[in-house]
Image: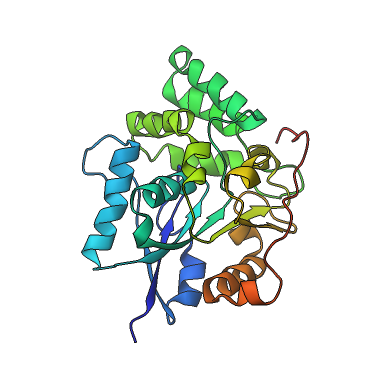
Amino acid sequence: MKKETIIFLHGIVGNKNTFKREMDVLQERYQCISYDIYDLRGVMPSLDVFIEQLYQIFVKYSIRQAHICALSFGSIIAQAFACTYPQMVSSMTFVGGYCCRVRSPFNERLTRLVEQKSQYEHQVWLAKYAKMLNPNCSFIREDSESIFYKYALQVDPDGLEKSIRLQLEFDSKAALLRLHMPVLWVMGEYDELYKSTLIEMKKWLPHVHYEEIKNAGHVAHIHEHEQFMALFESFLTGYYFQTGLAGNKVKYVENPTSA
């Protein structure tokens, strides 16, 4: 019997090892595939380019349908792909996913940073970006600013800026209204900034299954691996729906604190 496939997408920075621990656990039961989204062979990022890149993964491995698991910015690529090729997506799981072009502290800060881009050298601007969009509150013992900055410096400056601007262009509401496959949306308890974008999400995606992971921040699957895997594996097998785990109400923070 052929294994089902899970394709993993990393965030706006990072690499294909973002879900390595999860892939190691699942590889005996699933065909697990990840890739670097900036491996574009000199082509500038755009939504169409990211969609085509993911489509070519399906072609390369002769995949007819797959589950997609995405971190943060990767959820945007997954949503856009699912709108374009809905028949190829079995389900989607988002970790630290967020909605673009909605009123929220996240999108307000992002807009301000993009408007200021021309005023600073690239490295100085990246440092400001890392600080203003640091997703984790003080409860998370992780230097998120330094981690983001380190990996951001490894991305072509023009390519990274294109991806960042894409977040101001992508219409999350329009995309989510078109999706009908099962969606598991996982957020860390302390991922306050990104949760601020989800207030209207349930209206656009009524069948979403939202879960918050205790003691976790933006990369909830890393902060609390066991909690995440319990949810993810149950979701993949359908056991999630049979046990009453599904259907948790979304919990929002009214005024996210600055990280």
